[in-house]
Image 1 (cartoon, rainbow, N blue to C red):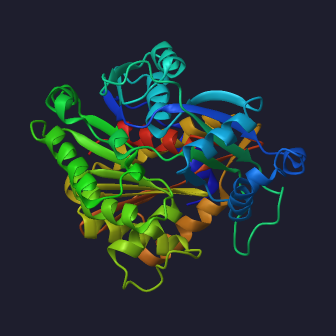
Image 2: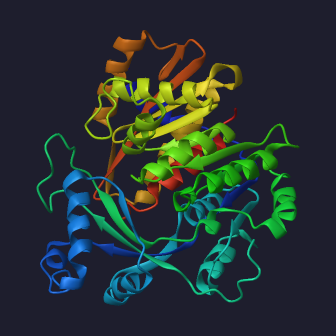
Length: 416
């Protein structure tokens, strides 16, 4: 399918009917810092105390990968936030916080955000955006606003590694939170789960703060309890690029079988494949995969975990793998296109185009999987694969949170 076909499809996107949604658990403020040559060469980033932060930032820039550093030493993290306290600007952060504000802005009729530790300014942003806030840790009175450092960078500031496609991305430094931040407390569990059970779309995040098998098992049990009395409920979990074996293993073994849907990028897909199917050739924890390899990998994750739906977002194209027994392919395609338009609008670029990389990826996938039933739709045995080339925005003003905006929109807009 050529560029003109996709231009017409994007022009004819319908605004889908979106049901009320719940989001949880991680909500904070982000300090958005634009990386420039002046910042890289500044005395600030040359301070000895910031050596590791600078090194991790440069690695993210060299690989153009959205990396996050969870700083376990709280006092050390406070040094970082103090060093950059006069830099950048504050915005809502955390996957749940970003998704909540965004979903309310696009017309989702009721957005409920469940959180442990929203500070006063964080709550104010959420409430002013039309989001209802449910504090599930009332014992913690007057919590402060938690601030994460988000370094957004354009391509070209440093040489990229071999095989890397230069693109805008970000590096995040944040504190490592207690596992309870992604769990519903026992004394309020029944009440919270009962309230969530009134919804049909639940977008959950924050499981990167769990590490023990018992914590993951408890989280999975809470997901299953949410779904127990509501057959129409679908629970989506959002990945982050964590390389810790215990976290990835717990997520793969416990959270995925309990959930219905997952959102992830190509790096996170590789990490999951390494744990779910370690013997599968061509899927090590590093390296660049072709579009065909990525689609095959997404299918493998779905078949191994039992997920109904997997949404992979990578540069130039988005992939949706959905079980055939619950899919409405045309609605899913429209949801992806709608989410793509919404995300490119949030990026605030100076101009846009249909991604040539995405068009090329579709051609490769068609060679491997056979002809499309209709543009972007490939029936494959027990699953349907849906692929769209993205709209690329040039000279964007925002990169942080775009993955959360994309995933939450596509999930809430989809019918499955």
